[in-house]
Length: 328
Image 1 (cartoon, one colour):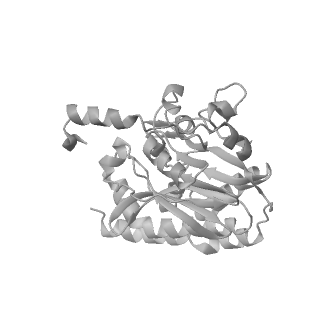
Image 2: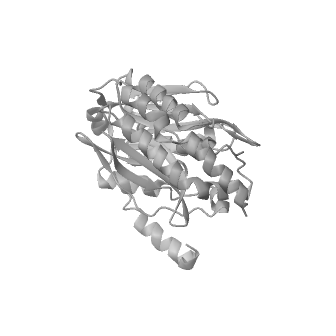
Image 3: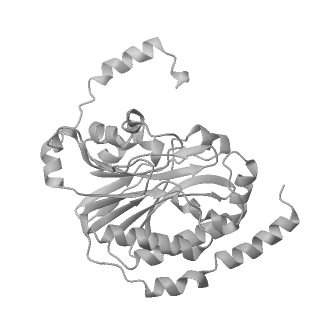
């Protein structure tokens, strides 16, 4: 239980560190490159660091955006939990295993949400690029959610909650998402798979059937980098759903946890000359890095070989005869 004194101290700290007056002047004067190419995608490995105030966060977002826009990127992907780096504005220690951290998150969620959305809305209003702003975990109507936000021209054009949770997230009591959506990129459609959502093929197949040809995967994996584990996600979905996938990662350490991964762009293996399915991949798994690639959708359509799952009808009968349905 948070004491009355702690709540009062927190109110004072937040009023100083999250006030829009801190960053509005900076954002009003910010100039960003415009007229971007929607076929150029950018993904980051970004450092896991907590920002002391909203101005620091705004400066950081603007810096990442400038780097991506200078490469001509029209679709820019931030990593999972990027919005929660704003939790530093509370001036409190962040410990993933301490229940008081969840209590703190619940207390500051309204300010966390409004600051995150306001900064990305204002920055996105200054460019034609579509921004998949990672995710923000926050408490809404008494439920903890991990939600991705997609911005374009100052507006939120898509939100989607993570459905497949990590054991850590289940321990926190996080609610699962149950809705999928698409957004337009000119002549193409795109969707989002939040981290573990890309490890299972069902969501990507649903989005591909809805018309998606690009899937964005904001990620934050609390484990040392292992290629065999990483390729079961975004790379595998590019193969099973025959679409482009792009993945970003939060990298760094938090207490006893290490977050590592390689930002990358993937395609069906026939799309790439070496048949690797890797269009671009960061060199480092534990440092900041920007990865960009030009996506050729006409070439994608030529090489796509959508899998025929009709043969599974007989397999389904076999499974049902051997296993009780209530186990699923």
